[in-house]
Length: 562
Image (cartoon, rainbow, N blue to C red; front, side):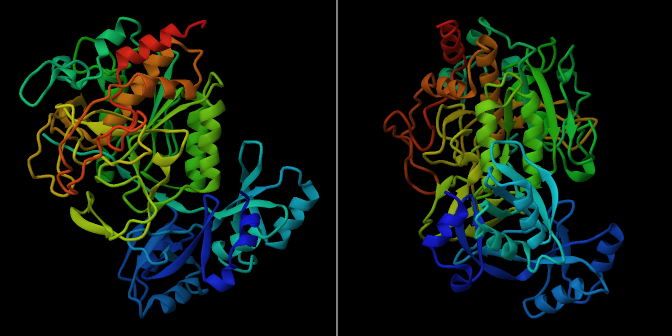
């Protein structure tokens, strides 16, 4: 429903305080006392801002937006100072949903505007002039949607301007272009096909024979076709790795960090995650090292810094959606309230329906994440405690929790199972989970505590970036839903290799309908509950079950010319 229609049924921004529209829903906000954001005009200006009185620290949120840490007694004065001619920076408050903790909303100086497609150019120009908005780009799709920039003459910050725009007749949606912050869905546990139990398992210590995805049986039908492209969107890829070589293996590489076509990791940036993710999906079968589930398919490596505002997120997926049949994303937000903007939501919806080189939709896979948390809990009664893997400290979120990426109805949300064919203790859960795939196991609040389960063998960084195993191009210490997601994406690529006439929605349905209904009767080691019971073929821990490559490929083949 359009924002303007909802406004008629709800209290206005003036009566409710500060509100923001996100994903077509209105969220009441509170300003954070100890921080705000700035958008400096240059690196030199950023260094000047670091020395401003009252600054306790400045950290990047994106490569353009920076978080300024301060004290509640100094916040307003410091913001005014940074906005003054002495500094000339753009400063915005940081917000959280009212009554919640753990969720933070950071603004840019832009708004994503969706207009009535029947609007005339003159009407659009008049609207943009009224609010002194600068058009930066237009998005594809049936709606008239664009990214606009708030200027000094717009009469307010992006939230205020967006809310005013939402009341206009021509406007279907006006939402601030917010920064989306993600965490990689990895965890380390500490050649090698025989060690890759997730592809083919035999009963061994901490391993059961049914734990794998039954890859060899699927390979009897197809090894993966080169014209099926798997994009892995992550933090960096060692493209010199021998398992990423081969005629036509690399397709349309893209680096959104350096702005070039060389998405290599950078040790200084702590990049280490993309290389092992890619290996799980597409590592070439070349007689050495490891092999990916879809080793015959092509590989599109796409590097970004695991943070992106709405506009950049749209830009990334629009670019990827032109080349890739399958998109693997082993990252997402921590357990906070992170709904997608309407424009991002619509981008995923459109790409899943008509994207990709075949025009039949991109199969988009997202990690459920590794916090043993709900993907969507609008109540979160009592709050939720989770481990921040970046700091090693426990955090608490009160108020609603939503991972808008994994909850999108057109993506495949992937949870994790263990080498014992049970729920991985860290794996997020909920009705939004579509399938699970084998990965490692670890305790969600204490990674040093023992839980049974083997790690995943895959490609690792050696010459570029950090690694999971020092001085090696391979590791057996990978895992998390980061590993389960590219494994699922690779199975999807095999399905399309077997039957390229399938639409993305059909691939998703096949993965779900052919999955193994694994059973785990053990209680959650932290929460004490059990979410492994299937109702209507689905459960919170495993979705429709563990992906079975052999079954999925056979089903895809059977639908040829059906």
